[in-house]
Length: 571
Ligand code: PRX
Image (tube, rainbow, N blue to C red; front, side):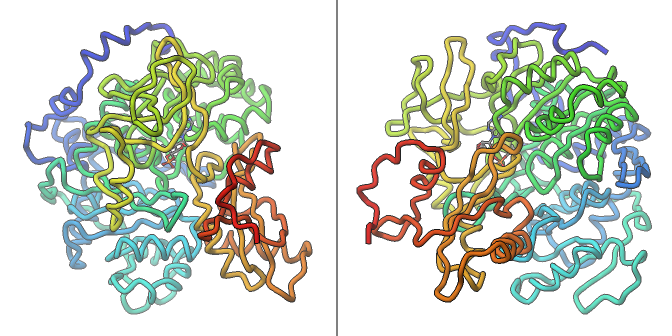
C-alpha cells in the first residue's frame, strides 16, 4: 500500500477544498436534517452492502480473537438500544460505561447513542472518588460495568441518588447473585434485526467526557451528534483512513482519543479496527501490528518513548511492512521520537494536537506535508487556528513569539458546554477565539511549536490529571494537613505527579507513610494520579487568599526563577 510520505500536498489548496460541508455531504446528511452517530457509523455501511466487512477485531490478554462485522454491530447495537429502553432509559439520560476494553465497551457505546441517550465513558482504573465525582456531577441514570469493577460501583451507589440501574455484562460467567437495582445483560444473546435509531440533530448531545482542570472537580465536556462531521473528516484527511485499512488506536475509550478515533472516526470511515485489551509490552505491540497487518497506527509519545527504550531489536524481530501511516497525540512529540520512528519503521510519526474539549484533531502534520520533528504541524484545513496574545487575544504573527493556542469557533466537534458549569465554559473564550490553555509559537512556515500548558494541569503519559483532585484526595488521608500537587518532568511519561505534603501534628515522615499516601491516591483516584514522589514540608506556599501557589513549587523544582510572589502569604 502507498505510504503517505510518497505524496505531497498543497496546504493552501487543501484549505479551499476541505470544508465541514464535505463531511456532511459524504455522510449523506441533508443540511438541517436528522442524523445519529450510530446510524452513520454502522447501519449506513450495512445498507450500502458492506455488512460483511469486519468492523472490529478484538484481542484479549490471552490472545483470543473475536471478530465483529458491521452487520454484527448493527444487530448488537439494536439489542443494546432496545434493552436500555426497556429499562426506562430515555434520550438525553446519561449512561456511564465503566469497562475494560471489552467488545461491550465499543458496541455498548454505539447502542447508547442509537437510543439517543448520552454516553459517559469512565476509565475502568478509576477509583471510588474519581468515579463518584463524575457520576454525581452528571446525575447519571445507569452504568454499564463488569463483575470485577462492580465492588467500586456498589461503594459509590448510595452517594449517586440519580443512579437507577447497574448493568452487569458478565453475570453469566460469574453467577454470584446481583442486588436490587442491578441487572445482567448478555450482549451476544440480544441481537435484534431492527431498532429505529433516535432521530438526533447535529446539536443533540451525544458524548459527555470528563476532563481535569486546575481548579475544582473534573469538568464534563458535552459533545453532540454533529461532531461526527469533524471526526469523519479528520479520520479521512489526517489519519488517511480508507475502508480497506486495518487501523489500530492504542488509546482507551475512557479518554477522548479512544472514542473520537477509537470508535467514531474509524467506523464512520468503514475501516477495520483492531482493539488490544492487554497491558503494554513492546513485543506484544509489534506482534499486534504483524498479526493483524495493521496499516494505520495512532498512538502517544509516552508509548513511543517506551518502545524506544526497548531498542530496535524487537522491531526487527517482527514484520511491520503493512504499516503505511503513523500518528501521535496527547503530549509533545519530541524530535528524537520522530527520528527513531523513521529508523524503526521508515515512516514519520505525524503529531496531532487537540483536546477533550475540541472533540477532534485541530493542529496536525498532514499526510504528504513535510514533517518538522518537534512541531505539531498546521491547523486542520477546515479550521482557523492562531497563536494569540494572552491579554488582547490578537493573533501574534511574528515567528517564535510565544502566545496561546486559539481556535476560531464554531466547528462541529467543539464541546457545547461544560455540564453544570457554563461559567467556566464561557471563560474559555477571548476576542472571538476558543483558548485551548496551551502555549505555542509559530514559525515562518506557519507550523505550530508547542511550549507548555498555561495552567497547573499535570500531563502524565498523555493523560491529564487535575492537581485539585489529587490535593482533595490527599486531604482525606489521616496524616495530611495540606498539600500541593505538581507535574515533575519525566523522560518517559513527560510528567509524573509530585506532591508536597505538610503533616498533621503527631505524624512524622517515614517510608511507610509515603507508601500509605501513594496507595491512598491510587485507590481513590487512579494509578495515573498516584504521586511518584512525596516531599514533606512544613507548609505549602499559598496566596493570602489561600490559593495554592503551585508555580512556586514547580519553579523551585526546576531551578527556575520563582517570578512574582507579591501575593504570597508569608506567615
Ligand atoms: O496540553 C495539551 C496536551 O493534552 C491536552 C489535552 O488533553 P486531553 O483533553 O486529555 O486530550 C488528549 C488527547 C486529545 C492539551 O491541551 N496535548 C494534546 N496533544 C498534544 C498535546 N501537547 C503537545 N502536543 C500534542 N500533540
